[in-house]
Image 1 (cartoon, one colour):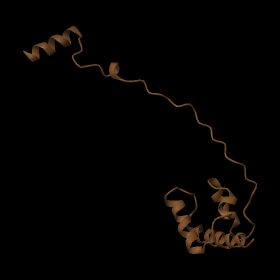
Image 2 (cartoon, rainbow, N blue to C red; image 1 turned 45 degrees about the horizontal axis):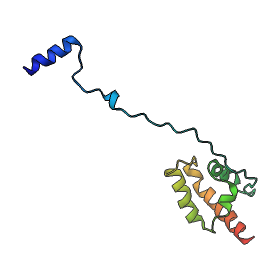
Image 3 (cartoon, rainbow, N blue to C red; image 1 turned 30 degrees about the vertical axis):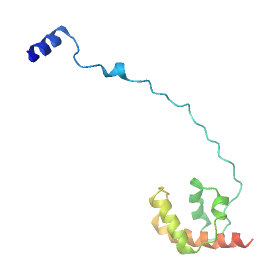
Image 4 (cartoon, one colour; image 1 turned 60 degrees about the vertical axis):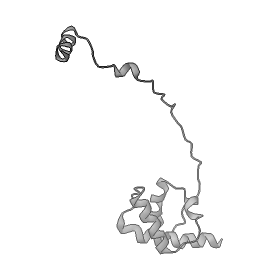
Length: 113
């Protein structure tokens, strides 16, 4: 009996499955978001490794990096590795130690000012 009802419904073009579209609720689409970042005129101090520090500027301002608490080279290696592995910073592995040495050196110099 059930098979006959399904076949009759198919022949007559009737839907026996509840319509999903009629139960769907409209989805609110948020308005586009614009973010304006503050301008920074600070730059990394020139010296051995400063050309590597430019890679940090993809996400950070120089002043943000330079005002971090004084940290040694090992601590900077850990931070750079986290930026590479977790956040995808494009710092080649063979430049990590040189960048860490530079940041440790300029970071301590900035803290002494």
